[in-house]
Length: 469
Image 1: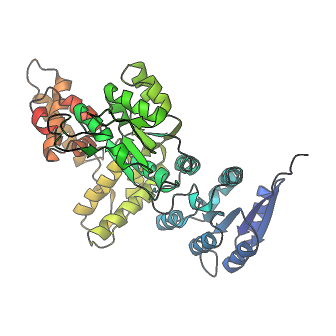
Image 2: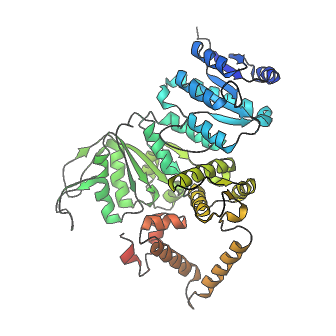
Image 3: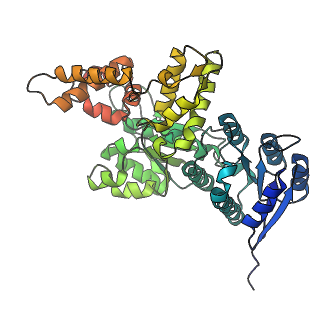
């Protein structure tokens, strides 16, 4: 005889009894038990004495608000999922709700369309936890050690995948455009895993010359090559028991890919210049902004390594696909920048927020952060207006200035030169000079990988002197 499905319990908390009646009918379904109360104190008492899977509460509930209710419920029952509702939630409320552990914040006017899908998603998480016996410390809600800001559906999907994969040792491949926050996701996988007491070691595969990358990964023996004046442990050895994050894995040379494949197959490797076989317990998380399937087809990436790495893929959506996260991110950066620099509190006008949401953000979250930092540095008041936001494609003087600069650059192309190649090298060299020779920072400034920048500069006179920095 098969077991009856486990009943799932939803607690509705709202002072509006008409809303409670509507939500009870709207969410009623077989296997779902709905409880209801009209104040925060009673809601807390219900959760104390009854297992509740999902709480849906108004932010403006009394005698304390929904944000405080989130904190109290998380202390009483860490596995309970909490969704807050509001007539028009402010950016600060949404940020704080997310950081305290709320699963979502919904506008009340959108509830007829959004409430049921959000509830179904939350109850599926509950069911998945029951099946996998997830401990409470490893919820798919990233509200503690790693700060990932956003309430969009796309980002919630990322949270769910991270929450599920963190407990395993399966390799994870994080994909997405430059500046989307791939390293943050890698940190979240580590911090929510049983390996969190050990280190997460990071190595940028595109920022290290090919002849040094093998040594960086696996270590070397004294005298194994010019400059090897002592034995050195590699990153794999240092990450034993923890996590190794391989950033820009798409730029890893084929010669090193072979050795990485061996580690993934049987956990063994050797230091450069040594015949001793070593082994380690290392969880691999890799990241790339390239399409590795295309790289495989072009012969630049090993197919067998690709499938070894791509056991679980976490795709980070670009910022233009989640405009609802832009106000939260902008507010987060504003608070962090002003607090760090001891500045008076600065806020964004509604028109400035609208401008930010209309921009396509080719540099993604990193570009948004840099834009907010520049706006704060140049701010003449405590309210940022559209004219205070330094966007490259903003209307007015900035657009004209940008066009003028492009015209000057085109005019400077030497006769007979390949204009596109020449401009690429000039931009690369200028970015490298501006960042004091730091290859990774220069690549970040241009929105490319360090490996791409190195290739652009490969025939440039600057490459031989600057690329090693």
